[in-house]
Amino acid sequence: MGLMEDYDPLKGKMFQILKPDGTVQSGMSPPLTDQETLTLYEKMLFIRLADQRCLSLQRQGRFGTYAPIWGQEACQVGSASVLQKGDWVFPAFREIGATLIMGIPLKNFLLYWMGDEMGSRAPEGMNVMPVSIPVGSQTLHAVGAAWGAKLKGDKVVTVVYFGDGATSEGDFHEAMNFAGVFKAPTIFFCQNNQYAISVPRSIQTASETLAQKAVAYGFDGIQVDGNDLFGVMVATREAVEKARSGEGPTLIEGVTFRFGPHTTADDPTKYRTEKEIEPWKALDPLVRLRLYLREKGLWREEVEQRVTEEAQKEIDQAVKDAEAAPTPAVEDIFKYVFAEMTPPLKEQLEYLKSTLK
Ligand SMILES: Cc1ncc(C[n+]2csc(CCOP(=O)(O)OP(=O)(O)O)c2C)c(N)n1
Ligand SMILES: [Mg+2]
Image (cartoon, rainbow, N blue to C red; front, side, top):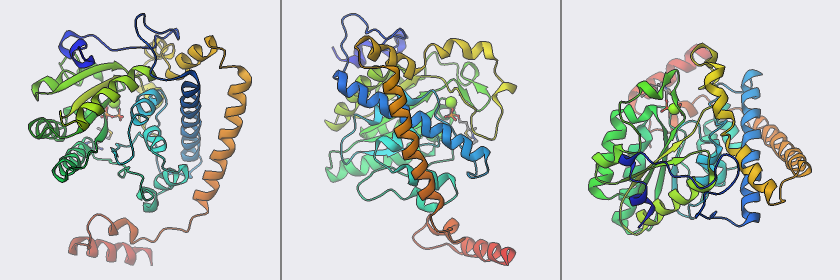
């Protein structure tokens, strides 16, 4: 039996390989060699450090705003790392992890949050769509792209990232319905981080799990421990293989927690307590992997220090390069939605220019 049958979302059983204490569930095995695990751990650490830097860049006024990944690294690294060349990622706004794993240079990622449209332009051959701010809208784009690829006979899949809150949006339901009917090769990756800004998961939906929403649309859904890198990888790989072989979409709910603010524009102490955060700290995806690697003799304090130092240097350079980029032209705000600017956009551009004089 496949994973999707074993973990029927209506039965409320969450898939997990790596337990919080760093040991593997009995009868299961990790999808990676020890060396590969160490490499992915280092990438997760890099992502966490880059994310922290982004937060401080915003606090220093060098970013407009920022939505931190902190806590959700396993969801993104686990899922994006099983994709193949040619596959596409459709991010929301919290996807530094998936974006970097897909090969986008950190400099480009930084540019976007510095307000430069060039940050949305993926280098040739790196299939990551621009950040999507309207909640859930990118689910439709991912399904459209997947369907288009299917019609063309391209064996690619699309992965769309969104949050628990996005599952209450009409766009999400339209995308799920369409994907089910047309068997679009799309993986719906829901990062259930327990909050949509200040709205807790408990009042987001009366459904017991988010994964079970797939049942209504006639395809598989699975709830996976989103802080378990191995579990996320195995669940995503199965969904990807299924999609690639023409068997249609899957909804994956990664159960995780957002340790930071929603974005730099809010203060989470206003809507959640320290007591609520405490149990999640023990479930931190990096802590768990570190415990696993330490047991194997692969993690030592010196390794952590060396990787941290190297990462900080690389991040410093990316920040320098991004800040040295030419100041973007005001036209850039208007230029890239349509092949040709529409009359209202032209009017708005002229207005903006007149106010800048
Ligand atoms: C269509 C739309 N409605 C409202 C907003 C304001 N908004 C931005 S993020 C957000 C919550 C999203 O929560 P969730 O989907 O759980 O994603 P998370 O931020 O937790 O990653 C809201 C309501 C928006 N950007 N777009
Ligand atoms: Mg959320």
